[in-house]
Length: 214
Image 1 (cartoon, rainbow, N blue to C red):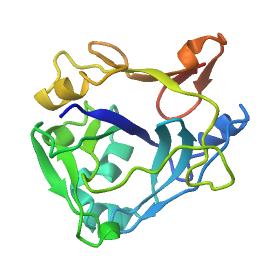
Image 2 (image 1 turned 60 degrees about the vertical axis):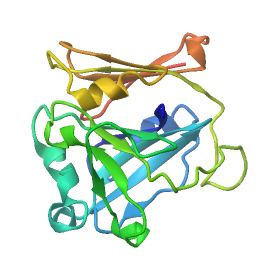
Image 3 (image 1 turned 180 degrees about the vertical axis):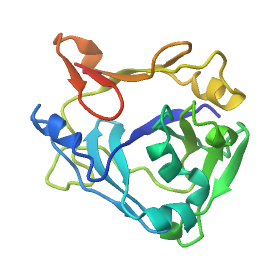
């Protein structure tokens, strides 16, 4: 079954102050999560059928020793040159790309993420498929922050990486509609909303270069 992009996370410094730069654009911040057993927390911005998540390590010991330790998020957060991006997709059946299963504590051991076997390759993003049985929340405008949607639609994602060749896992993800992976480039994540028709662009000042166009 084809993969569809659900959300993208970027590992950033504690508290994810980069999110304040989106508030400066008058974009609306949704609810935050903390992840038991993973040692992480986040800030999230909801759009139509897409979520941008800024993920950070809140508990180093838990990140290194908890149920999510094999994600190596703490290691990615401190290693120079490590790609801090996570591409998170959905599929209607168990994905065919090489993967291992991660059963997070916050799902009570009932559902698993499918994590690409390239997870130890810090030059590439984490490539993750959501649990098959996890329902997708509708993205609608309203007072409920869990489903609050900013007035923008994700049109394109470009991920530039300083690698010569992609792993087979990343090659599979690179086939997702509206996602382009460019190799032999300096690291950068570019997100385009609403086809970029307004002609606006914002460079986010963070540990990792992010460009937003709308």
